[in-house]
Every structure is written in structure tokens, then in C-alpha cells.
Length: 368
Image (cartoon, rainbow, N blue to C red):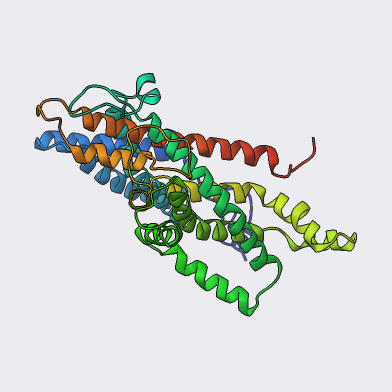
């Protein structure tokens, strides 16, 4: 029987035993970016020829064309499995870009509108003695009020939320634990206005109706922060490996000391991030602060005496006043946008501090 030789010098029988080819070609690494740029150019040129060019529609159709072309190219060159992987990657990046659109738009608008009024004068002066369309006044009193009220709310909510999370994770499920979990879930969905009414009613029982103080606003914000702190801390504590706890118990370390020195230390980075998320959740609340703190035109450093101004209420108050009486200047709008930009900067600074705390206080991995 005559054997047919393959181009590589193998017999046909030997070649058939090798089975189907498992390796495929490989597209260059710049292919996705090149296909995306080409898709945008092609769609943009088509709309330009039709005389109805639109940036959002060009980007949208360009992404779709990019996904289709890249899928076909990958299917031909790299195979079906790689094509599906490319499609999933494209969908992921597209969803990420879609989520960035409102965020970037918001930041750009706040910076563009707020920079006109955002300066040293705005940050260091109050609205005391400013009336009508006067081109004066700042948000110093609102900044002080926001920082003090938020920090005091953090001092209230973090110990309560962290201790609750430790109990739920470290001391096992129980009837009390299930009840706490249920009420935490309920508190997560409480509207902010209800938290404000609760804090106002609580202090009105002891101090009488009409009470307006910074501490009342802190209590209202703490009610909103506690469930976020509990949930975030609980999830971070669950991620701590049980081997660490068992190793500490094997050395004779008491349970409370294991929690303090091992568990909390290991989960410190995630807990700090959760606290920052809870602060970001409440620092922009307006409705509960309108009820509990009120408004003021001058600075008040005392949380336990008198009304205070906060940045969200300041933004609402300035924007609600609309145009100045002369109908030409927009000084009130400028103050509102500048205060909104200030609030965004404060939140960004808080997250920067949280990242530093997480970096320096979380356990080090690897060897130096």
C-alpha cells in the first residue's frame, strides 16, 4: 500500500493522528484601537456626507460598527473562542464608557460654571450683609457648617456601625443578629426627609418645637450613614480569612483581641473606604438639613447652639433665588455653581485622605 507523504515529510496516517489544528493566528495588539478609530472615522464621514453630523450618534454607531468588525476579524484570524472573548471585552468597555458620560458631564459643567466665582474671596467670606443682587458674599459659613456637621455625624455613626458589623460577623447568626440585619436593610431604604423628621421630632421632645441646631442635623445624617457603614464593614470583615482567626486562637489570643489586632487590622482598608462612601452618601443631603439646621447668613462654629448653613442648603438657596432683581446678572447662579464645585472638591479630598489611610494602615503584603 502506497503512503502519501505530506509537505512536512510525514505520512498521511501520521498526520491524521495529530487531530485538528488547535492554534490560530494572532491579531496585533493595536487592532482594537485601530478598528475603533476607523469605525469613528467611517461613521463620521458618512454623517458628514449626509449633512447631519452628530457627535453622540457618531460615537454610538461607531461603537456598534467597531464591535461587529472586531468580532468578524477575530473570528477569522483567532477563532470562535477568542471572538467571544473580544465581544465580551468590548461590551465591558462600552458599559464603562457609558457610565462615565454623566459623571464627566457633571464634573465638566461644575468646573466650567463654578470657576468663574471660585476664588479666595468666595472661600473666606460669608453672606452676612449681602442683599439682592450685590456682587459680594461667599460660602465660608456653609463650608464650616458642612465640615462640622458631617464630622460629628461620622463620630456618631462609625462606632455604632462598626460594632454592629463586628457582632453580626464575629459572633455568629442568632435571633438578635437576624433582627439587626432586617432593620439595617429597612434603614437602607429610608428617605432622607424621614431621617430629618425623626431627628427634629427627637430633639423637639426635649427642647421644644422650632429647635434648629447643627447637632440635630448630625443626628439626621448619622441615621442615613449607619446602614451604609454596617453593610460595608460587614462585607469587609467577611473577606478576612478564617485561617487568620484560627492562628490567633491557636496562640491563645482572646477573641476580642483577635478581632481588634487581626480582623479589624486586616479589613482596615475596606472599612475606611466604606466610611468614605457613607460620608459621600450624606454630605450632599439637603432636605434633612433644611428641617433640622435651617439657614444662616453668618458663620456659626457651635454645633449645639443656633442655626448653621451647609453647602447643599447654600446651593439650594442661591439657585432658588434665581436671577438678581435687575434681571441681567446671574450672581446667585454663580454662587450656587461655585458652592457645588466646592462640595465636589471636599468629597474628592476626603477620598484622597481615605486612600492614604488605607495605604499606610492596611497590612503590608509581600516581603521587602
